[in-house]
Amino acid sequence: MKTGKYNIAIAGIILLSFAIGIYLYPQMPELMPSHWNAAGEVDGYMPKPLALFLIPVISLALFGLFLLIPRIDPMKQNIQKFRKYFDRFILLIMGFFLYIYLLTILWAFGLTFQFIFAMVPAFSVLFYYAGVLTENAKRNWFIGIRTPWTLSSEKVWDKTHKLGGKLFKLAAIIGLLGLLFQDYAIWIVIIPVIFVAVYTIFYSYLEFQKESKHK
Image 1 (cartoon, one colour):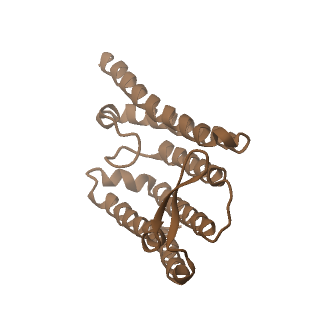
Image 2 (cartoon, one colour):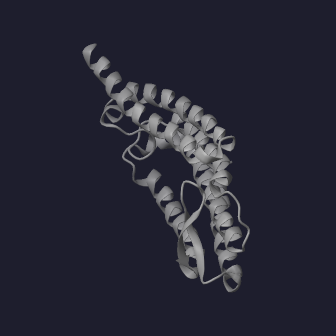
């Protein structure tokens, strides 16, 4: 699928979220749930207009930003080398937001469920594909593991992203264990991803130091 077709699909998801909000507006309560704690309990509410249209507006703004990035990046020619993976990631992000939006609406209708449990598969899919994108990302200023050391060396960039991609995919698979241990689900999902993010920063530094010693 070419970029234009991805953009049409993404625009369709965003328009669908706006249409859902407009259609359901009269039926929604004046205060809608907007935040759940780690135990999956509602601990925050928003006025109906904000709750119904915040996610669609954020999705639209992000889409605009994602469209801008390949145009303004000084290394934009490199983005074209992995553009299909980037386009798929944008589509996945928009689907992720739509999923959260629908869960929020279902809750507002009175259908209660374990919110964190419902989010575990969505997070795992998102993080897994983030790993795919990371493995295929070429050096640029906006997408990937951008540290002073990866941006200074293409070799360090490639090594860090190949490892980081595999680790993100592993973290996504580990996150699915949250389906078995619901009381700890959010931590099982988040902690491996944080570990990968921190570890790859240190890894890029160490690889850069090794490369510098061999020059």
